[in-house]
Image 1: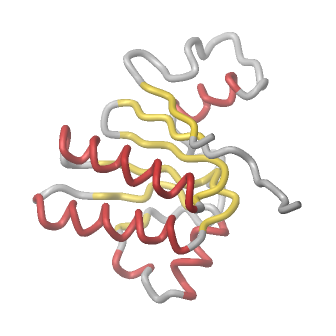
Image 2: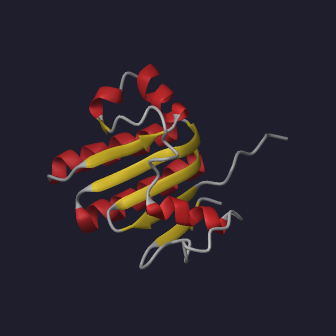
Image 3: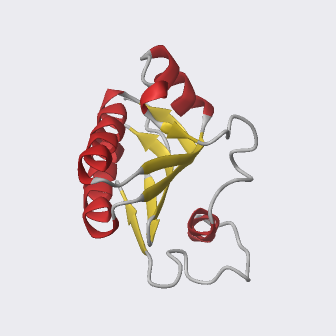
Length: 144
């Protein structure tokens, strides 16, 4: 039986999208759907990938498509945090230079935005000050 990684969790609040877990065929497809909607609504997107544990070609395709949409639509896609798995994939595929990457090589977990910290409460990590896992007016989706 194939080993299953952590479920993909995508939390959206305004123009911020935070992702944790695997960006594989399921998670990458879900990310593409969310980013398409957010980019259509807002144009500029800040993407937190600091808690992505695995990313494959489907996840990369979703990132590249979002980056193309941003350029074509006059918006921007900024990766504000990238896990070592994401950085490695971008480096070995020579696509890192295509993205607006914040200097988040270290301390990606510290740079996580409020929606991702709030999502941690939904995964059993308690912080009474954080409230609803999706944040005020936010949406939380899983790629289960």
